[in-house]
Amino acid sequence: MYFCIMQIPSKYLANAAEQIATLPGIGKRSALRLALELHRRSTEEMRVFIEALVELKTKAHVCSICNNISDDLACGICSDKQRNSAIICVVEDVRDIMAIENTRSYKGLYHVLGGVISPMDGIGPKELNIEPLVERSSNLSVVEIIFAISPTMEGDTTNFYLFKRLNREGLLITALTRGVSVGSELQFTDEITLSRSLEQRQEFKLAF
Image: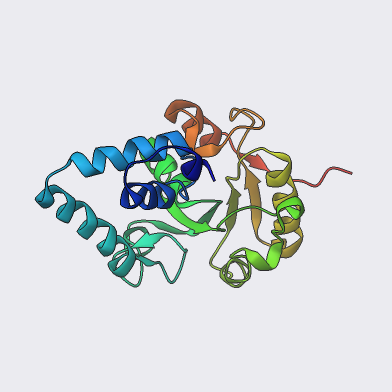
C-alpha cells in the first residue's frame, strides 16, 4: 500500500522495494533506499550479488545433527573431533552460535531450536527442533545440556519445557547466569559478558 501511494517512477523499482521490505527489520523507506542503491550498481556487481544469494539458498544446508547452517551434511563444529561431544549448548538461532563462538570459551557442541515457545505467535513445541534434541540427550555419553536461550518470558517458558523433556538421571542441565540482561537477545550480548555467563553457568532448577 505504501509503495502504491508513493510516486515511484518505475514499476520495477516498486516491485524490488516490495520484495526487500519482506525481510525482517527492513521498513518501507529503507527498502526503497536499498532498491535504489542496487539499481546504481553495475551489471557485474549485481551479477555477483545475485549469485551470492542463489548460492546461499541452493548450496548452504542445515546441519543434520545440530541444525546449524553448513556447506556439508554436518557442520564444521559437529565434525570437529576436538570438540567436547559430552556437552550440548541449546540456542534459539544460528546467530547465537556465532556469538558464543566469538567468545572462544566454549568447546562443546550445539543444538539450534529455531526459535522459542511463544503461544501468542502460534509457536509451540512442535514448531521447534526439540525432538532431535531429546534423542541426542538420551545418549548416555552426553553429560551436560546448557540452556543458552535469551532471558525473556518466552525463553523461560522454553527452558521449563525442555527441562521436563530432557531431565534424566546422570544428565546435568545448566543455564547461563544472569549476566545476560533480562529481556535481551543473546546474539547482542557483548563477548566478555557472554563468556562469563557461560563459564559461571549454574544448574537449572524448576522454581515452585
